[in-house]
Image 1 (cartoon, rainbow, N blue to C red):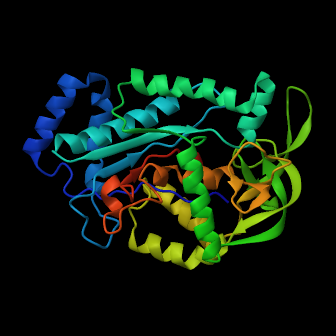
Image 2 (image 1 turned 90 degrees about the horizontal axis):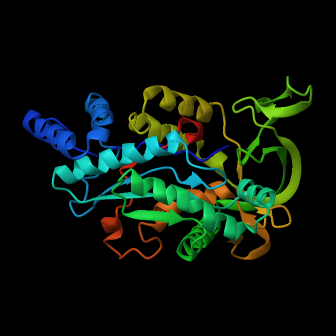
Image 3 (image 1 turned 120 degrees about the vertical axis):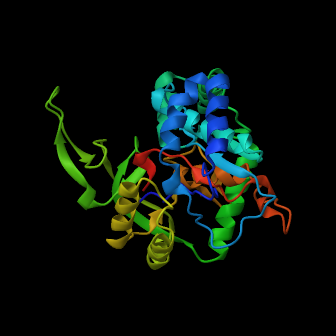
Length: 335
């Protein structure tokens, strides 16, 4: 089960003042013509997104923090990557037009079985493969004139340190335990699926039969291994309570309903590591050299890494932006 993320909006009184909205539209029209149509589409729906998801008063010193998904480097960028970048760029620029400080974080997801196999197929060592392929995403952001503050690569040393520290905090609090894991695993999706989520599929072009995810259609293989698990099942009631009190945490509403339904139906503990003999390209579990941290947990921490985790100044933890005000993500990774 994938870790849940949502679109987290904390903006107050966005676009309530018609004069300010008129001035902002004019600024976008003159300075950023390619973004104007998307901006106007966002403008028409922003009134529904004004509820603050935090029960506390926002710190006036905290910058607005908006993030894109981080992009796999196993293939070239496509229009979906550009769309995510432009959306976040518009959201940041709107804050800046209001005289507020804003931070935009984007980057590349460079670990996992999918990357390891893509590098092998290309006949390259994995690090060289990532060093070459991340550049196309970097260039895409530059050519789209995205006003980014951070471009993270999950293969960087500061991210490795943040992820390993986060792992130790989870283990110290009893959220991680060692266990044998069996299930259907998709290399393409980097996900374990329960038996109820896979089906026998026929490739019409070859006649080959294989097991595949019902959600994505990607091939899965039966896997049995010893690894570490995150106690996701223990968070069911807490998550449902949070969603009830923060109905705009994920938008649009249809996606929120899907997440609520998935959590209500029950959560399984999440496998958060892979044996190093199967996955060597990733961040090692800090106190177990036989295991590599699962790519989804690794990738999720990138938003914290660029908010100076774990080196925030006591009492000023949010001055680098965290918690994020908005995560822009694709519908296929909401859950």
